[in-house]
Length: 429
Image (cartoon, one colour):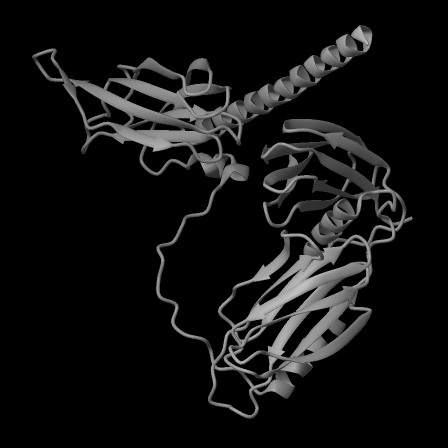
């Protein structure tokens, strides 16, 4: 037993070292790309330090601008791996002319997003930015490394998320009043369009079930569904009250669970739920918002699971990978995967051996709610990526090798831990 425990301990240590090494290599690669991008923009870039911080540790570092620089702007860049959370604050001190006294400026601080913070100061008019500064970095709940850079540049230089596009994070819009429900078109036309859309998209079966909402416009029912990808539409028939406006919202869950397969809260008359099931079984469907005891028609369109999904996989994994393929309208996989990889939290790199001129599909699924991942495939200078989010826990990327015989899959698993399974299929025969 001692030998087994020692072996397991050594294996765990090797795994931690492997993941840490992969994360470090990822950071070094991003740092090199960042420097090349800024230099191509005409900026002067200087790496200040590599800082290792423990959870909730704070570090103060002095930053000096090049005295000979004529650029009006100085940016201090703190760069970590994408999932790293930290705060950076810049305290500037400009030298007052003729006095040598340091004048404290208003602190400039920011929480990291996608593993980076950029703190920029520009001088007024022709004057350059302040010569001296102090950056204060505080790590959040995990240990990690930060690369610190001083970038001296002109106005209008590209942002960091333009130089590293995989780290782009969209803006959050202010909340607005979106108004009331929209007027619904006539029921027969809506039903006809839903059927026609499913058939155009290749559904192998389209089945309709009729029910009636309660007096308050809500209801629930249990559906027995076949394994595959489903598109459920809920359409209320207000033919008897054409002036009525309604907004049907719905949620579907696996039988006996509290985890949603899909939720529709859109402000539209009809609800739509797209999801995949790794095996046949029952689901619970609940809905609200029909405005009263209206007749409802539930349309279920079915697409079969890809034949190349291994039957030995757990049902949840089959459903997640199938959903990623369905969502991306990926090419059909017919044969079993040529490669399978099981990985853990953090950054993982997987070398891929390819045939020249062949096309492939890489897909992954997650085993734990509350986690998310990014799948990226690199072929030379080319790269493609897809995200497995907290709700959509699968990702898929299709690509062709061209003249390359090697590629690299990079998986970044974030959130509540757990594992991922990556599979690679060769497309065609």
